[in-house]
Length: 160
Image (cartoon, rainbow, N blue to C red; front, side, top):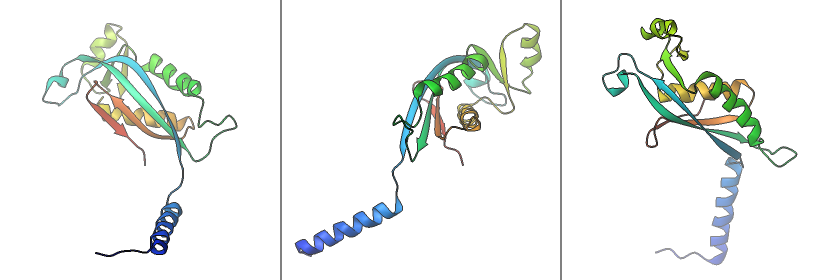
């Protein structure tokens, strides 16, 4: 067994802290949750999700910044709420979300049913990426979006 002197222990502690501090930096993050209801189905899928069904969706959006604004915040939560909630209400809430090539699109269009069409399958993974891109395109420092399809199932997108 090796016994270190107090001086050696202090030196190791210093070196460890110095190395850790030299390769990491402080990052602030804030997150906000949003809730909405939607329906969807997955084409070419062998399982329950191949049929029309609905979910109570939840999305958590996390923003990161190395610095805080003059008020001591990464971003005012109400600003993020305004951007995301308005978009969700207008585009996804209480709508059927389908792939653009879904054969039900003409039928639901004829019935004047509200829909949101995606260029990809409407999976939790694709919802997470779509919402990440939305927030990033609006100029906010988004680092992660978690999309909860149910209370027990979620998908996350962290960007590139």
